[in-house]
Length: 139
Image 1 (spheres, rainbow, N blue to C red):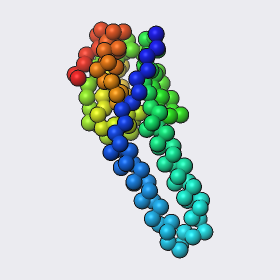
Image 2 (spheres, rainbow, N blue to C red; image 1 turned 90 degrees about the horizontal axis):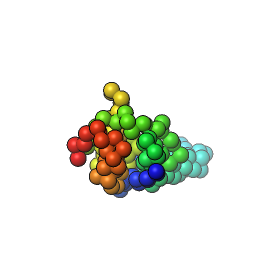
Image 3 (cartoon, one colour; image 1 turned 60 degrees about the vertical axis):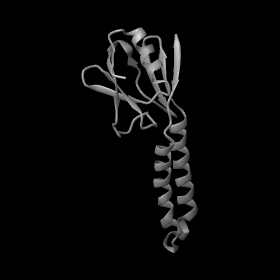
């Protein structure tokens, strides 16, 4: 059994990240950086493309009895669903494979936590609970 849940993207968060990086281009417009203009511009555009890739290609896949998370080219270690104890809403702004302000904390083991933001949060939790009925949910 394999089920894929795509991440919800908060375009406000994406705009904030993109604009903060684009402000780095302002110094490029001065004469002091004239020799480095194209190098720095290409670097900035590549960085923007990478961040956009992370935002648009984040997904959470339930394969058998494990949760696999992939954000663009980055793969996170699989989490055995049997070890998940709680899924709850969070307002954490920590870096995570969750490109949205509407985030869920998946608590597992004793102190571990993974922050996610599936588009279909209730279906995501229901699928986890179907595999491990001991999972508590606060959503």
